[in-house]
Image: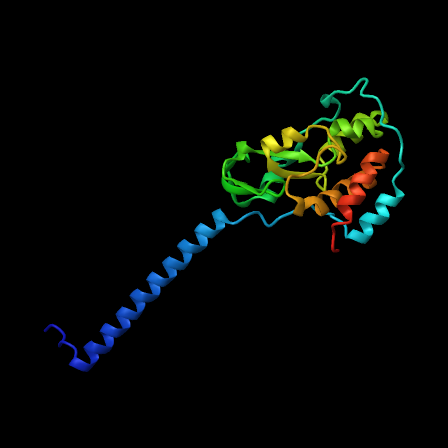
Length: 230
């Protein structure tokens, strides 16, 4: 014989329980959808490592040698080999894109297939990795003029692919291209709110690698560093 139908009170309890389960599932799905949309839209939370405090940056700046700008004679970007393989199929550029982006997914060759990148230089956010360049905070040509012309190629390679200090950062491509090989005396990010951080990264990189700087460059860096609160 088929089971007897539930009593009215029991049926009511079952109905309430089923309704609660449906509402819980709907709420869970909605939460996941919101989280997913935030993951794609949120600006990058990562930053290059080794950005010093204002006090440390000031000490580093004071320790740097001031000298006349060196010659560009013999310079070639090929003398700073990049991008090199960092891990598996990921090279330096792809490693920085993963570090500095939000919600980044990559394919088997480590090329980003999704994600977003916030450029602190101009405040723009990009979803296409082709719109993003990896900026050398201290440009390769600037390094050459500041002492790297005497380095071995292996040291220049390490400099061009430096992931241990604040030398590489993902930014808007045309902004990076407008910077070129200029130092802070002639170029700085359009967002004045980033001048403090930019100066600290530039100073730290030159300090880490034993590069010298010009008088006008030092003056510009000091002005930017003075905007830091810490």
